[in-house]
Length: 231
Image (cartoon, rainbow, N blue to C red; front, side):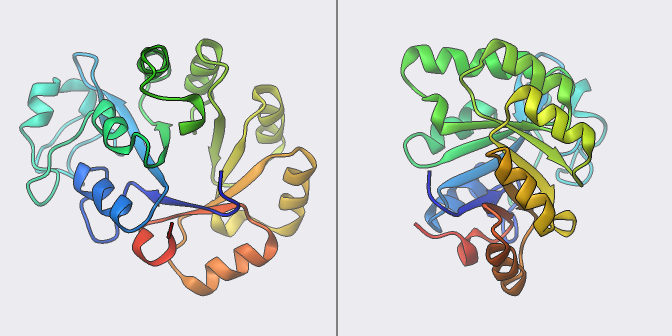
């Protein structure tokens, strides 16, 4: 893995519809070698890539993702005519080109994501080092970790507290994904002592990026990979 990690946050979401194949294609074309996405379950058990539990902000639909079938979700416009993709669609797109950070956003996503990844590992379509599983929901992360211990894990939080550090040790996470304003040099020192990486979200300003790099942050999430992520 590269020294400084630059992750395209929901793809190239600054200029293109977030969490769509178009946004991920644009991120890859810009030189991003990491993609971040969010996963929910549809009513019929499909793993769909969308951030919110509700549809209104990012599509022309309404209601909860979890109450819609995949066929219903596919009928919606997620921006510029793009459709809500499946997790499998993005993994296919990124294969051999980028590491995919799969954030378990929806309730009940831990087990089906683990099963999808397991099938791909067995088929030789994906290696554990090409995926990073993260979540704010420790229950979902625990479920995935129990089924696929070989997959690197990350905890997502607005700030670090004692519980987060305890959980990081318990799950032996690879990285902590923290809100940029909560990061300081004491936190970074504690992370280094535990051999854990710290990634900041969401960084769209170059002076801020430089400051974080100077402090020793290991990477960032950005909406503008065309400006910050290069091969």
